[in-house]
Structure formats: structure tokens, C-alpha cells
Length: 342
Image: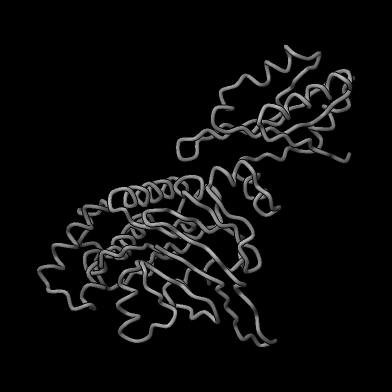
């Protein structure tokens, strides 16, 4: 549904050219929810604004629903944009228009007959749960309700693609969850392809099938969400995941552990799928003369698949500890021996 090839964007700044995007390649299948994550300044917003040509790429190609759009101009570009809905971080509603009128606005611009507009707006009001707010103005709405209006407006023209530019970053956690659930419902009910950008790994975890990690204008890591969460290869990705699961514990806590008698190894295990049901900790204690202390742990579900992360202190005789580590490496788990300087 979306294919981006060798996309670059250079801005002309006061001190010379600034390359915001560098040879971006990504592909989003029909009906997929793909997320782009990165810190501020990574190039996320520039990338998503290039998809519907709100920003004109310097080079590269973008194909949406079989149509190469980077060369389109004028009426052809306007027609292509109608197939791409977009929702924004700060809603961008017209304050002088009611909820119903905001949703109707793109249909009015497109010259849709009034009767068809009313029918479509009624459908969308029901879809986003705002039928009872149809005649309210934006100032009378909560942040979550405003974003629901933005989503309904983006869907007005029956787009095949929905672009989300930090759609939940201005919302509180509970409202964020409700908006993410709405997007997931829309994806499943309408088969809509969704491309979203965020700086929150929790958003990626909740609804995305695929994730692309951006840094300094480049995609540095990508893949199915569960695979990337379980086996991150880049430091930026690991930092996002560690912030989500609070994997880093205070060094004072580790110091107390490793200064106890015996030989210690601090180990982080990541397990998925069938491995998640295995009694790994109990097995270590049975097979080897070691003491296993769980220092941190988390079990989560991503698209229905379990993802577990455990930080263990394995202590005892050095030979037994090393045997236990060797055994862990045979289990199919991701095993990382943590090094700490005290």
C-alpha cells in the first residue's frame, strides 16, 4: 500500500543545507499498522509529511495504493491526497465550526452533495462515538474528543491510508489508550492501512504490526514489533525498550547484590513464544548448585504473543555459575550478561 524508495529531503537553513532524511526505504502492506519511532529531530514528521507531499522530497519515490505520487501536481495531487487521511498532534480543528461541520469540511471542499455529506458524517459520528456531541464546538470538547473529531474528519473521504502525526502525544494515558483502541478498531473494521509516527514505545507496542526506528534522518532498525522488542540491535532501540519496561535499576541495588559472598553473574533473559511457558528459573536451581535471584522482570503481550524480560543474579561457585550460563545459551533464549562498574 505504501512503498518508499531511496527518499531524501534537504532543507536550506541559514547556515547551509540540512539533510532531514537520508535514503529512506520502507514498505507498508495493505491493512497493516506500521509505526515510525524516534527521538525529537530524528526526521519522523518530515517523513510522514512527505508521504502526502505536504513536504516535497528532494529525491526518491513514494508509491501509495499503486500510484507514484512524487511527480504529481495540481488536481492530480489533490485527488491522490483524498485517498490519504491525516490526523495531527494538536487536532487542527476549525474553532468556528461544530463537530459535524468540522467532519463535513473536506467533503464540502470536494463538492460532495449535501445529502451524501449528511449521511457520511452521521456514519462517522457513530464510528468515533460522538453522535451526542455533533453540535458542540471544539472549545466544548476534551482532548480525546477533539482527536476523535480529527479521526472522523480524516476518514471522511474514505481514504485507503491513514497517516498519524503524533496523534496521542498531547493526551493523557487513559485517553491515549482509548484513541489507540479506536485506531485499532478502525483498522480491523475498515481494513485501513495506518502509518503513524510517535516517540512513545508504548504506542508501538499497543497497536503496530511493524516498527521502523529512526535516528538522524535514517531508518536504523526495522521489523515485526515482537522481533524488534525481543532482539534490538541498536542502542537507540534498546533505550526505547528499556524506558518502557524500566529495565535499568539503580547501581546501588546491584552493588548490594554482587558484594554478597560467592561468585555472581548478572544476566538478562528475553523469551518469547513457547519459551515463555518454560520454568527457567526453577530449572537452573534444580540442575546446578546456584542461587537464582530475580532482580527485575516483566511479561507483556504483543499482538497476542508473550514477551518476557527477566534480570537475574546467578550466584554460587564460579564453575557452577558458568555451567548455568552455558545451559541458558542452549535454551533458545536471548541471554545477555550485564556488566556494571562500581
